[in-house]
Image 1: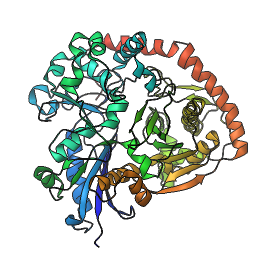
Image 2 (image 1 turned 45 degrees about the horizontal axis):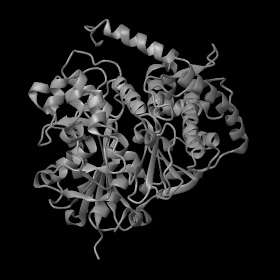
Image 3 (image 1 turned 45 degrees about the vertical axis):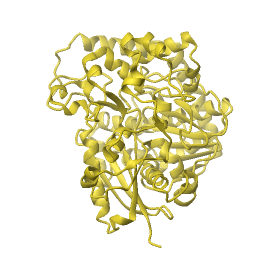
Image 4 (image 1 turned 180 degrees about the vertical axis):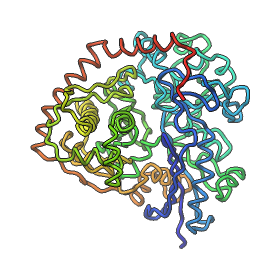
Length: 558
């Protein structure tokens, strides 16, 4: 019998990655990456001199189509006949949403809206809807909405409802023109199969869908009178389970990609949630941390528990037969990138060139052999806000213990340790709520940094498994495509045949774990002091925003 293959496409923060996978055993045949031409727009729109306000993060949907038209033809050059490729699946960072017309045309594609920020894609790390999120949380708490506990007691500014309310209040003409507000994952699937399909994963985690329903219309009306019908007019109550078929590839999408029309198109998914089966982590207690610009933590559970500060628990959110738990850290790789881009002196750049390595590799290597606590620093990893467990995008970062002897490699290592401490807060929140974490498995680009991974093992005091696929989310999407195409009957069977993981790749050192536990105790003091007790960070944020609003005509430096 001839081999069958599927394609998985992972749409990340800065690029899209596609893989061609053999369905029999998950063998990686070919891969391709295409960077987004517009990247993340945080300063201004294309061709516009007007700066965007703070906390905005937009993208251009043309970049997503360019990923399909560039990566998939590259995969086909591997020589696998197109008649052996039976399906395609995609995953996306979330919550990443865009407004469209009724036929799916993004509003930013229309000339009359090309200079309107609210007409573009709001990326997951768009945090400018925090005031709306605060009001949603306050209203839900005052009304004792039963769904609020499913999200750890707070919803995030990153989510679809807060972003939609921001659009209504700040740009009602854009909100009115939007026939649909849709997750980018579902929009790309729409472009592939020609029909709108909404997945239950993003609806549950990002749009307040719980137990078969959204919040009542009177809840939305209490936020704004014109928001009452947001679900029926802008979203959809017709949701599809993960692994199901959204439709088949249209002739137009076939011309775009080079694939055969009529192959199966899987329902869209989230990059983190699709990774769990890719590393075989579909049983209760197997926590997967997808570590990149941010980190998302997902885990299946066989019982329902309300875990404080979680991003959500959704039945069917990872696999159709279990409760899927999600938590996350809003900034991880982004922290290290910020430091390298803004705070490394010229002599370090010269040394990196001399050694033929990146600044990340240099700083990691220079700090590799430090003893725990040797640099005398402690950091809070909130440079992009806190997603779990405080759920507050208005929080900011902190580095304590700086002296005139502090070196760049010291700060870099302290930031790495801070992200590991943040992960430990999340693990302990699960376990304190009766959701045990038996296994910790990591995936994503940061797993290539072995020093970082060893620090995580030592901080957590747990063995860490690592994805054995260089593109785990894309592999997971290819697995869901295999299920949608009928090659495997369900995602459990697909995981048994196609998943890739190296178990216990990093083992904790008991002495370092004991020392890190002392340091972690101090981290928790700072965490609770600045995250819960003191308003200092929010005062600083407020003063910054006031200063920005007082200079509306300020130009972005060339």
